[in-house]
Length: 234
Image (cartoon, rainbow, N blue to C red):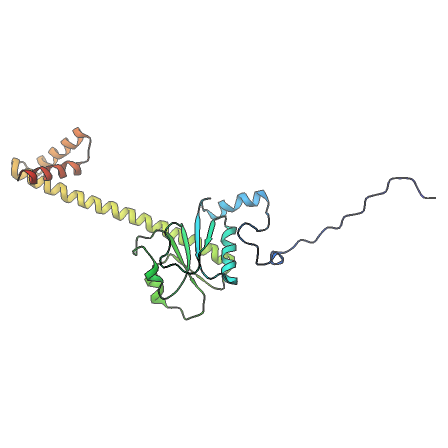
């Protein structure tokens, strides 16, 4: 005689975990596999990129292009794919991955040394690498197909660091140029005071310095005012 106890529920079979390759190549931009909250919070700190970081990808959307876009999305950056290649590289992005071509230097809108974005050249490997062309593009990094996730992340981070370092140098150069211009103006104003007021060089400088302190402006502004007033009266 069978017992009258409660029946145990059927044992659920645990589904095997799918590997990354099982998800296919068609899941990119907003349709990637959901990850844990801890992993999602950790990614921005790992890459060091701000949440609003934007990247333009100007490459063909073949298998290599899809892989590049997907890996950039995994870095938690806003990605926009642009193709065909525009006549002029857009300026509103923090970083740009652009397919290397013979006419690329003519499509770059900024002058060398004053970039608006971090530029990463993408070599598809279909033709011999033209080192002179690479030099003329004055890029901050380069990526060769077929790329790996590590190569893409490294290229992006190194290009960003290079871009920021170049920008800091440009800021220092601009500041030095401004200081040199101010020094020339001050020297010219001192020469006028020495000649017109019969002052020594030290007295002329002290006069400019005193006027600047009283009026709460820079000594360069006072020197420029002295020169302008003399030229106006002359």
